[in-house]
Length: 381
Image 1 (spheres, rainbow, N blue to C red):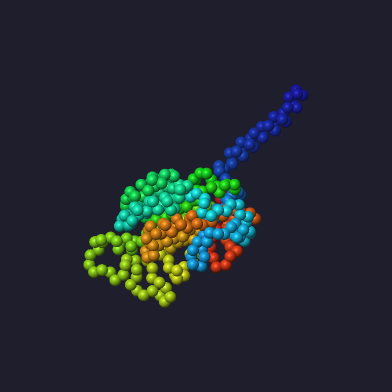
Image 2 (cartoon, rainbow, N blue to C red):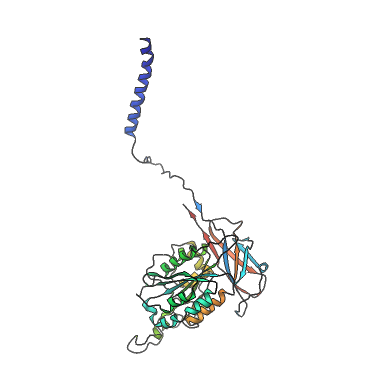
């Protein structure tokens, strides 16, 4: 009896504990507790991961006052700053690093009259741009994007693809094609390291300078291109020139101005140019637009898209409307690629997220220097 009495309180406590647990379990709501009236919702803290930039490969074009390439500079002649912080040059080369080239060609019906001229550019693309130690791939686009030739060192394969180009639908998904091209270049092995910057990554776009219907945004494409050390060059195919080449395109009296050119007088101090082309006196702040496009990828670049893309990555856009044929433009780009400096550095002392401004200075006077203006580091959840 004594033994039974001593266990009774323990049994009562156990019974009450079980009853309370069952009651609380029955009352507990499923899912997260709703906030009380007047209380703010507390979100779980999310760690932000910063995109790391291990190596910046910086193609630098230097010309004298006459526009001639300057090719007698050495590494000590250059000063590089990243967000105002001086950087140590890890790799320096003049035109010798091999090229990984992505050739992006418009194949819409709009440029059908230009195809005979484009068919002749294959040997220029391989011999002048790609070079003997380079590799290249070809991507065509209209209302879709087609990989016409994967990366290869076989110059004949590239030339055969270019010589057999055919026009397709009239679509023009330029930004989608550029996005695919950037991904192809960025994933190409081997990846650059601090000890070996690897091949120079170049995208050469042969296209009109407008986009129709792409899902990709130009600013996002350029942000990725900068982080992947891709320089973009562009040869602007002119619809105006294409229509002037096409015979029997229209009936009736000849227009008093070429297609795309307004018959109204231009504002004082400006020069009338076709849509998508930028004259030297147009006053367009391409650098400002390029930086804004990379910082704010949701913003749309309405005009001068390829000029902006080239400025953002250190390349150049050449129009074929007036001053260049397609072949001359490709030849000029190839000559520049193999006469420019490649400077590499690992960003030090400047780890902030956001836009990083790159400045390149040379200890000589009266020189014109072109390099990409910077890159953007984003924080990712």
